[in-house]
Length: 400
Image (cartoon, rainbow, N blue to C red; front, top):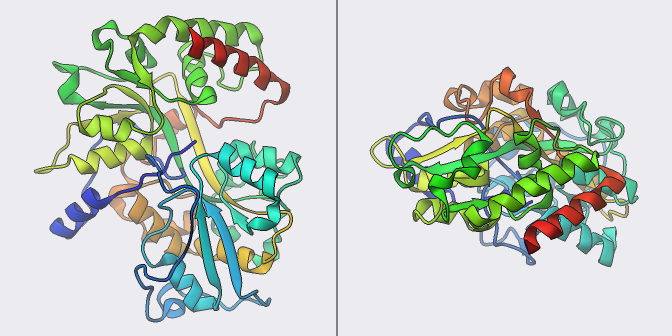
């Protein structure tokens, strides 16, 4: 899943102009990191030279502690695009004397295929979304974390360390940021005072030809399953078949399946409502923000939806494992974690960071859903052989 926006300039301009963080004011619930919109920065490797310089004294600025183990002089990271606030990687380099090389991917599956084809020694640190952690563990492609080398691991909230996607909670992964999937919309395209609060909206004849669903098997079949009142991780073939029929019947209402352009389409009034990762909708919100408001809204439907978490994981054959542990410890630093969230507008799994996060973000239910909504959110899980039933259903949906 590509959840990561390539531009937040609209939000940055607004914040710079007002001198403060304004409440987003999106209707409904949710937010989104890895994962945040769309990423077209794939396939390349970049170093940090030529980009925004880091702080003069990052150790002092962020209260970075000395580590009790030696680091290699290099670190190779494979990640979603647009991941760190300007200067964040450079600050790590300055603080620890490690040269960081970054390569980007556009989906978990692209990352998996690259590691499978070329071996895990290509990269030291990867950032899979939740369900992919389980897959990588089962394939023997990531190693257990040495939490003695990650003292900041204790900053994480329990609900993000005791998760269904890590076979031995907290052993193979360290959460980075989290978000949701739901419905984004441009009010100016809906007509009247449309109220979007249910997956039913994506089957509304009124908006025929202007709606899009994510081009993502588990997300889109999952949305149909939630509309039916089922778990999006069901292995029951009858329920999967029911969701398939619902999506086949929906297809004539859709403009297309789209995981790459829904942000731009919302901005340009080319599609609405759209099934979307929350971060892409946030990007559209800020790009259209003017005079204190925007026509863009986002909601997690009342039936529930997806919660996702991007995580750092160290590859099985990492050639710079200590540097990888150090980088995980670095982004779990309370001030660094807050810096990331204050920039991305996504939820932070770092409880200790909350004292440094803007109150406008912490109090925004579009980013931090209330407990009632959180109970209706599910992680996409590795469902083993049942994946074949989903694949057959998805093929029939796309070919209908």
